[in-house]
Length: 503
Image (cartoon, rainbow, N blue to C red; front, side):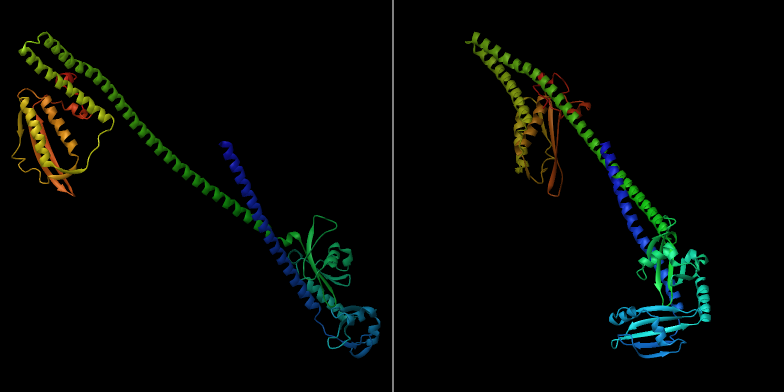
């Protein structure tokens, strides 16, 4: 049982760990996604701002070309002729713009005096052909513009906004990291990787070639004249993820602790309930055992009393039988003497009646042991039943020389409701047994007195009280609690002297 409980707890803990890991994984994914989206949004905002600032200029000229690259019409306010500008352009690449409408072409044409012309070309939407626009930047303006870009980029803090790089071609012309200005983007593994894998406004995950443990997230946007790079180290991107994971872990621990506390409380309550049920069941069993022990003791005492009764009864039965046999032998010897025969006949009758009384008592005991007593439920006239009982008992009392007293004044009309439902046979037997004991255990020239009272009627039940008293041997107050125990008699010689069995 102990091993089974330990295995259950191990299984339970493994489930808790698994669920916690699943929750942490989900929260990690959500937190990482949120940090990446925030970093991507921040870098895109920075790049778009720089892009708009760099692209804020006007065209100096425009030309309409046919599909063969010939000038159909142009406007040009620069110091360089339109044909000279077109001569500097890769013609096949320019003509591809007319054949593929989704394609555009741009290039910067530098000059020796540090000025340059930016050229862009797209296909016409109204008819086949090419539209070419160009803008000339003088040497003085280029210097001033580059200084403006540099001052603009310097407003971004690398630790918060990331590293910002603006390049003209491959040459870095501005950055918030001054050590990078004047270098080439091809010399930086990070910008090189971003340029290679860039997909527009989406973040690129890359690492430092010199330190493989240092990784970055960055992106690149191309304006009309410049390439704008922005990237952040991983530790600057995932700012909220560690705190979120720690908070989630703390919540998981709190929830698991609460669940364990709830489980412990539930188990404790269940154990207390089971303990109370066990104690109640134990008390019930103890009570049943006491009842059984009492019943066994009563049965044992009854058996012992019955054994003593049968032992005494064998002697009591032999006494009248020996008397009958003796008187019969005397009759055989004096068969011609009528006086002797008549006297012995009376004595034999007395012994036979005594024997019959003993046998009737034994038969009555057998009926009680066999539960052969069945109570009836039929209409009974108590007045008539009383008359029948008095008639029988009064004659028996007269034969035994006992005075019969029936309180006629109190009993002139004692039975106000004579018709009741009951078992008349057993009522008669109860009264005959009581009156029989009054006669059997009475003294010579004694008396028997009977009083009847009606105690009232309520809810269809009428209650009568019979008070029967005699002048017999009686019993002590201490023995009253034993009167319903089978075969119990206060005096051990009562059975022999009075022919009683204690039932």
